[in-house]
Length: 300
Image 1 (cartoon, rainbow, N blue to C red):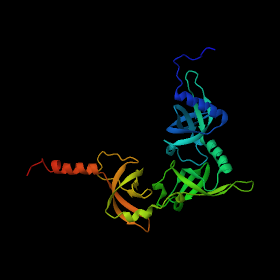
Image 2: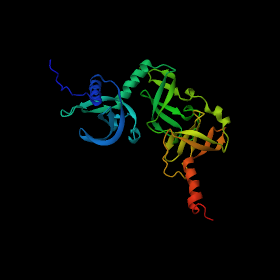
Image 3: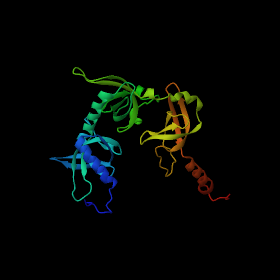
Image 4: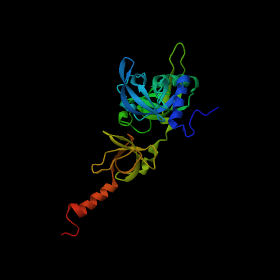
């Protein structure tokens, strides 16, 4: 039998991904893609905001109404995330090697929930998805199951306001502490905890002193509340810092190592306040003051 493809025909990663999408459309398998944009599309007789998904070079669209059965105020927080979905429909372009697909995350969450109730056990650990947050509570999805995690169960770090440290789309590991499976007479229920998966970092607070300068790694950057910095030698010990007033053109990045000066330690309240600075810029500032701001070098 003759080969239907030219000898120089190459199967690209996008073509393999398209084959996976078509198979998932047939069998309902849950897929995971990366959200890269927000657009408005005509869906039937209406227009709707959609998340644009990149699945290994194949593009799909996830309508806002199919992101979650939760009452979403907006989908901006779902940008630049890895999201599960099932394929509702595929659109074939005969002039191209791959087509596009319509995704449905709400159905994927339903499938995950069904599997959870069948297989999950107490003690199992899952990565929970933050679907909402306020000062005292994280509203989570644990394998498709809704759960409200109170501030005291989030971790050893004291959070005066959880919304300063978490946002929609974040994930955190939780341990299932109890399961009541659904029946004809009652809905299923779970309890979960993230704190028990952590080692209390405050056992190391004796190794720090007020006005001491230490190295930490930026865990999170919040435009209004500053930076959350984890001490390098005490995993889990996180301090909140300001944005340095004299940072020049320096752009802080997550996972960047910076120096902080401890300003206050509240051991009883389990809180540490610190001041961050950029040593490189401080050095340039001193040099500028010596040789530029106050006249040329050697002047009297």
